Structures are given as C-alpha cells and as structure tokens.
Image 1 (cartoon, rainbow, N blue to C red):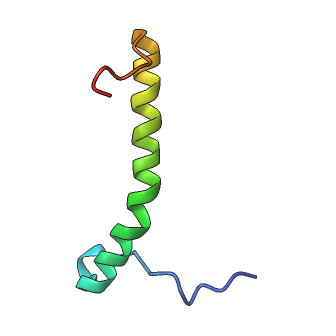
Image 2 (spheres, helix red, strand yellow):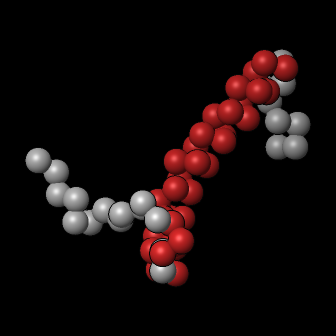
Image 3 (cartoon, rainbow, N blue to C red):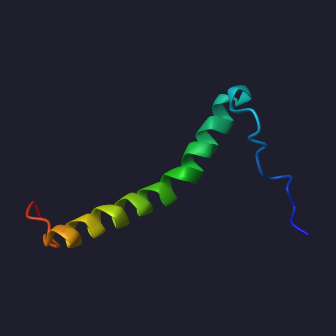
Length: 55
C-alpha cells in the first residue's frame, strides 16, 4: 500500500496556494523538459538535421 499523505489532491486546481503551485511547477518542469528535448531531437532526425548548426 502506498502512502498518499505527501501527494497533493489536485481535484480542484483553483484552491492551490502559492507554495503548492510552486511545488507542482517544480515537479512537472523536469519531465516536461525531457519530453520537449526528445520531441525536438526526433523532429531534427525526421528532417535530416540531427546536428544543431547553432552549436
């Protein structure tokens, strides 16, 4: 059985406090950044531009 006391209840996002909103943002930014980088790399592979000319 998992402990759900440390998880936020996100059923009503309008009731989030500033601290809860910051915590949610910090939890999401890492996974979203990774997904965006993967998608950008796949797009470059599809177009044949695997290397970024700016670097």
